[in-house]
View 1 (cartoon, rainbow, N blue to C red):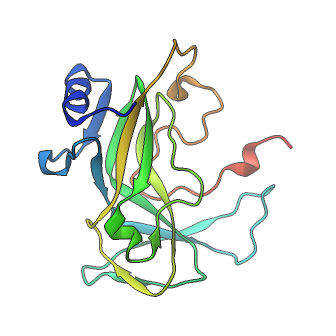
View 2 (tube, one colour; view 1 turned 180 degrees about the horizontal axis):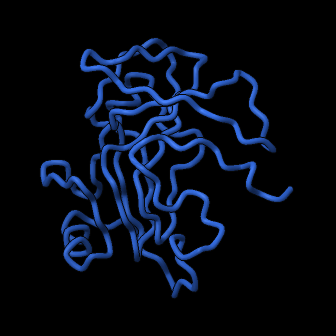
Length: 178
């Protein structure tokens, strides 16, 4: 079951869902549209290593936009800061974004109950496409959780992405034991 617009508003009123900035026009019948933040990043090295800290370089999207290229991998960020304390949030691309050949996540479309932060986007494109800060990029949908949660994401000691800032965050795979 997915929360409807009225249920999302009820949960926002209760404080179990937080979206900042919030714009009522971005609330769909069962989703909330999020926008591309002004910051992008790319990895500094062409070869990545899952056991090492792969560093990124940040840059801002200029007012005239930026041309994204195929065969490149970009990290973006949502303009919106969100908190989800009683539901499982999913971030999906908008159909208009997909029809431009833009993928906004490689694998990480699901958040956890207790996620608080801006969403890092894993962006790739099928052909060259110009993007702009503030453009609609995706939509959040919320699923109720069955049963009680013992430890929310923002309470986990090993939560690598809790409190994400309004800049893209690189992979923290290197912090895992394997």
